[in-house]
Length: 447
Ligand SMILES: [Zn+2]
Image (tube, rainbow, N blue to C red; front, top):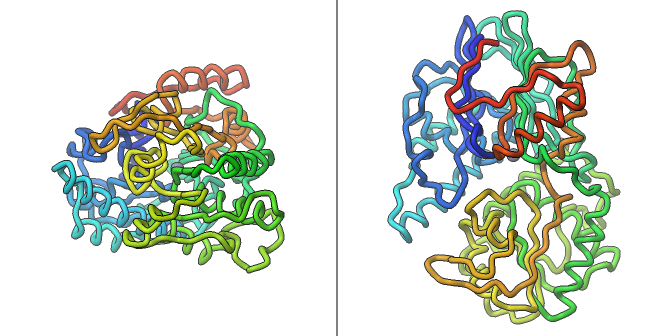
């Protein structure tokens, strides 16, 4: 078999790999590169492989950096089936629809081209097929594909492909341990080859169980001094975990009962899907008194722009959870313009910030950022809680890579910044996983 790398080789976004078997070609993930602009050269460029010869696509999970280019793939002539778990199908639909709205907005504001439009989005959605965990299927003859729970977001999977006597596993994104609303990552039974993410390949996270206390303390601090707390939201998963923790903190009286706004249409729609697919979740706490894990009395969801603009009139200390998570688009930017220059206010970062994004600049201590051509001084307090990370740290992934049965796999590292992949390869070798490669874009391996 031939394994080729077409994305997530230079950074953490744009996942896209091609596996060529005797009986057909499978594309694993087809994600957008995320940085300063969606309409970047790499997202607008044609695919570097023969799209029409791809027989099927396998999607590990719904995040935009794993699904964002599916409509472009269809526009370029792909007409096969796109396989994913049923919750992934639901979330992918809202993620792609939301991204189209955001891209149209950017096009209006900055005259940027749009990578895809409504017709190819609709066509891509029609090709998507949901398949549950642990249910092998054959997208091409004699090739068995199985989804296992990766514990990263609702419906996320690592993908096992059995073909020609070998087992190739694509990690997708591997979740953190002990996430209070998700099952843990399933065990890797055995594998010959693993294409593995390395987002936090140089880090050990703080334990997840401390994060509720830290969150409560920071909310209380900002509110206590009369400020507004901005939480740039990763709409799928992180937001639902935050709402779950905030619900518990409010029930137990650990945070003040001030107004909380959920100001992200995508996060609001995703939260509905989390409720709908709650059988796929695993809660570490008994049911919330109101029967809803993601809601509490002072939380208000502002779906429409009119409702969102009303938040501007609320002068009370408050918390605003708004997309997007890296502050390179979405409603959070309007709130940033209003509150970043206020020293009483604060920002809470709860997820990975890609280089060049406003979020990364603020996280690294920028005293001023440029938002919609406006210079905004940063006077607010900035805090990061890494335990909200949706990715496992290096120890977690190294443990996961040790198979339950059989020999150590050959590992290809993707989905990490270059210096982090080098550090992670070293770490893995120290932990007994010797055969580790860092592929380059368009590099092809015989596996
Ligand atoms: Zn992800």
